[in-house]
Amino acid sequence: MTTTLARDPVTPDAEIRPRPSKWVWSWVYGGVFSVAALLLVLAGYLAVGVSSGAVDWLALLTEASWSPVNSAYGGLAMIYGTAVVCVLALVLAVPVSWAAALALSEYLPARVARPLRMCVELLAAVPSIVYGLIGIIVVRPFISEIADVPGGDSLLAAGIVLAVMITPTIVAVSVDSLSAVPDRYREAAFSLGLTRREVIRSAVLPLARPGMRSAVLLGLARALGEAIAVFLVVGRADGRLPTSFGGFLDSLVHPGQTLTTKLAGPEPVLAGTSGPYFAALCGLGITLLALVAAATIWGTRGQTRGTAVKRTPRYRATPRMRVHRDRFAMTLRVGALLLPSALLVGMLSLLVTRGSTAFHPSFWLTSATGAAGGGVRDQIVGTVLLIVTTGLIALPLGFGAGILIGVHASDRIARLLQTLTVVLGGAPTILLGLAGFVILSSTMGWGRSWLAGAIVLVPVVIPVIALATSARVRSMPPELTESALSLGLTRAQLIRSVVVPYAWPATLTGLLLGLARAAGETAPLLFTATVFFGAPALPSGIVDSPVQALPTHIFTLSQDSGDPQAVTQAWGSAMVLVLITAVLLSAAVWLRNRFEGERWTT
Image 1: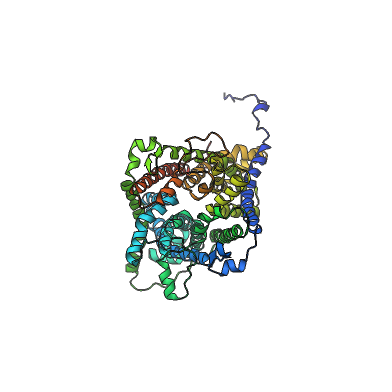
Image 2 (image 1 turned 45 degrees about the horizontal axis):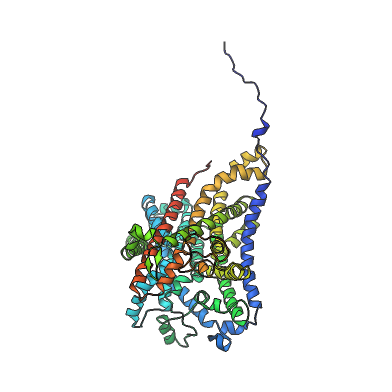
């Protein structure tokens, strides 16, 4: 006889049912509101500044003379300098970056490509002030030697430094675009007897090319917004505009000026907060923000199209010497990949040899003395305070914005919100610093304040968190959502109980990546939060409570490149900052590799 076991039905316990989650909507909408509000504050600051005095836009955009004493505000030479250094950076970086991306995606096995890709990502984490310091020590003497010009400050030096800085961005986005091409296209091309070079040319590049172009435009947005690294090597000479082709070539190896270096100099402080002088500077800020926004929007728009459009691969007639051409292409592309790795090794070697003072415990544990003595204990404490405060403010706002973009907004609204987030992430940090100086330090009367510095760093971190979170949410399997809704969960309960546990690993990774970038920012802190000496390790209040920080400490020391002690101190401080940034980035990479491909985490 067979006995059937049965269990009496159990009445569901009301206490374990999901609780109402109305607070979720306040949270996610607050995150999106923060993105829009930060953009509005930045645009509003520039608009108010422009309206505070008469601006001759025609002269600002078409004349080269800049002389506040004579009320001449021509920005054409700065626009020219910005265009030259950006074009130079793209000419140097794009061929190497695209070839390196092809090597990572199409030639190397995963076990080799992953550590090499991490090397490229480590280049992206090097703070801009460190790039500027390397430009002073390496690039400027190189330009001075080959061009026989004193000093080496030049547009060419700025272009070389920017090329190294934007290479990791172009490589990373290009690799993602190449990886998004379905393998069936490669398999179909190989089945026709094509070589690997012909497969890439005929089957992979036609589909990945829009995304690779987007990578270039995003790199251009980074180059347009960079201030400190260019500030240290460009020379900052006003009014230099060539009138002939020979003059153009000569201008490349001589000092110049860009929009960001003009805004990063002392003039924004000297101009006050109103009047024609201040209005002209704000007009330059609007011009710069418009250029960055145009490059960023165009880049992300092209990337979206590149991933959405499906085109049939085109196979072209193959030339002679196919095998030899294939091997030659492979050699060039793999060789191009070795260049970023060699740059990283060279930069680390330079930091280790010149920044050897950072390996002495006393350098970490003692305070600075005099102009260039002692250690960097107070600078480390100030940097950690700024990073922690920025993270605490940015994490809930960026997480909420990412959740709304990924799960609740319609496709059209999601694209709009994502575009606004990317534009905020591409906004030049020098403009954030100037806006914080006028609004927080001057209007609100905070003066130099550590909290003001943390607040102006928040727009740097929020976009990284929001974009990483939204990407993770969009990859969530639809059966999870369907199962949760079939159990009677509301949309708010779905977000709290399903989406948030699924998305938090990507959110944490985005937080660490954003903080790694914020740790190296210099321009916003110069105007709002830091002093070179005299500030206590821990502030006692908010108003008139500055701190000392590693990026601004390095920037100030690097200005006195003729003092060997200052140079040694700068390199040691740079090594400490790179180590802090490397710890944050390594944690982010570990989390990405740990949770990559996981469907569910609780």
